[in-house]
Length: 164
Image (tube, rainbow, N blue to C red; front, side):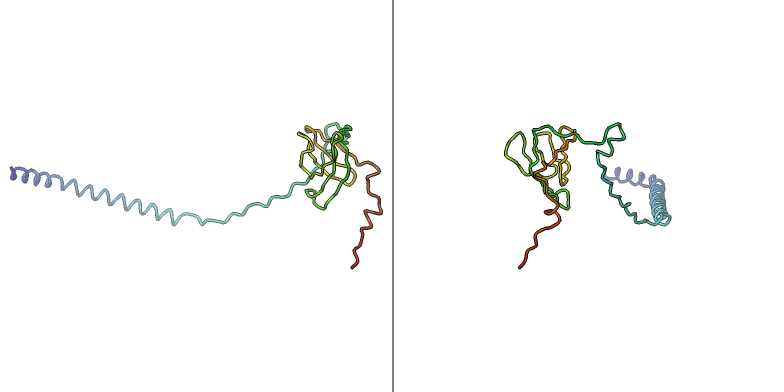
């Protein structure tokens, strides 16, 4: 039985050697073509360039009261009802550091910065020397500082000087 397998294997190897050489030639041809294609694209490829981002210009702040005239408005802010009372204003050089002292519905006054809620749905939008703009449900309202609480020109222009 051993001779039978030996002769059959030997005959099949002789028969398939013609096909084996063709298969090896095909594999070598495919590897050479893929290598040539890779290196050809590497040589033809354009050089990569560094792309810088376009600098973004700072958007100009637009006052809502100025834009109201475009749509038939008067450009004036509505004055709030008597439930807000402006007690004092501290205007800083940067708007986010300005502080207002405000009393709501006769309660004790509280000090707040821009963006903080006075009541639910009511935020402080702008702080000026004599008034504060409040957004109440999307409607801008102006709270004016009472005449007796407004600073006089003497206090604003003549700051105390510390002597040592």
